[in-house]
Image (cartoon, rainbow, N blue to C red; front, top):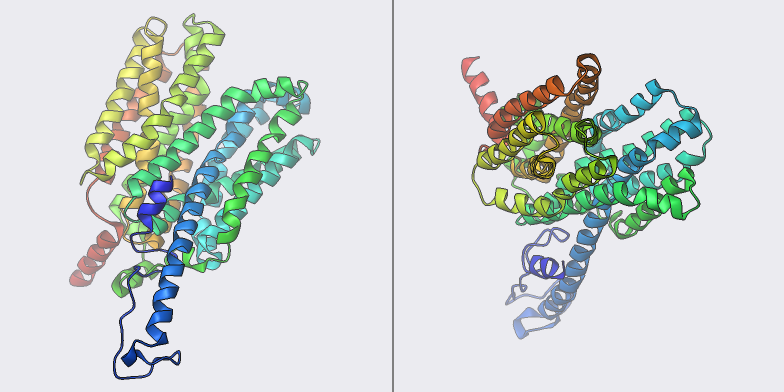
Length: 465
């Protein structure tokens, strides 16, 4: 982490907006600071000293951003996976019906779609750093109060508050990466995705043991995750007033900035392809998290082992989430990575269909590899736009549209399972959805930007007018 920060200090600093270069010495005139440049006076000397002084400040700020990204990513899923681990206890404690419990499991993608679309507007007004800081505060507040509001409505409202913080941070993380690390999109997206996967699996794995250690209270077991979110607020506080972190405020060519202001993202085929790819991979991930243990249990795998198999599937995202974005950014076309991940998914579903218990560990590993389409999608968001303003619009559009697409999938799997009495049809649906996921992923992986596509379409429309 320190190495990334020290390397970043050698390049153009996003905080300052200019490269670290020695000031030019003016001759034959008096400097604006009162020293005479012709004699090597105080003006250039002061400027040089200021430049040297600013360099460690920029390096420190860059390190702070890295810490903030990691801590924020760790908090983007525990609100969901910690609840999943204690859902039965929450239902009993709140007297929640099965229908309401089903609604509760559908709330996350719905909130991600609704609130995520607002993130670019907030970023333009307050700055991306300030919005992420506010998102961490919302997560901490929602997690802290939701177990203690005393009813289902209050629980849902507090959950929505936490999910709102997650939604805006989801959208703005690629913007932060593009803004501060334009030459390290792959490595920083990988670091962020790895931290997100770690937070997801950790919350699923330790919530129940922590609850038992706290006396068996599900309220305490859920509220404890607010402490982790509070820690994530701290590194973002110094960045709240950094308006240079606002989406689109970096030094970009005037032509690009003009494109950003009038960018109609729905006119980009790549934006639609990326939104569909994001939605289909999210569908596969939610189906896996919600139903994979039941598939194994119905095949005769013990309940404890089925839970471990799900943990293995989720844990695959920790190392691969760091590797895949780095590989993707080295390719001009990310289609081969899309095909490789999709092929793993198809192989895993085939195994679940024909021999779910016999090769359970292999199918869990393959499904885990396939689910790493998520960090790939985030990487492509950062690569398919020229500026952080473009990334903000693309991230909001792809994630909001994608999460809307993902809502029916897990529910449809449950309906097919209930009415068919087995897993044949649901697994066939899962495999069938993987085919269009590969197709739109290949389209989204082409080496082009949304700004160029929109400009070309506008030019073509003008020529035919």
